[in-house]
Length: 68
Image 1: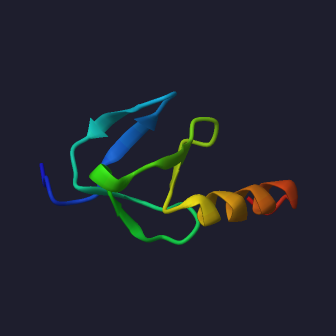
Image 2: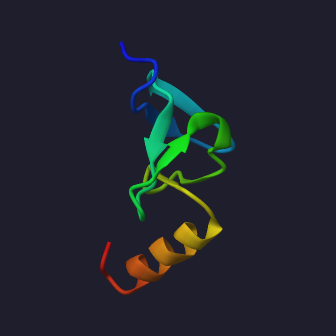
């Protein structure tokens, strides 16, 4: 396993579980790497991580417009 690579998570409320060890996950909107220790935003319903509140808002707009 590569502890410095991309992790796979199962997003829950209020925490997440590590399915595959890694150092980061990708933002579903921007594609940016998010270090696990800085991960604060995710969707349990969509099982996606987000870089920040702005990315959450952008994804919500996409979903409501039928683009995600």
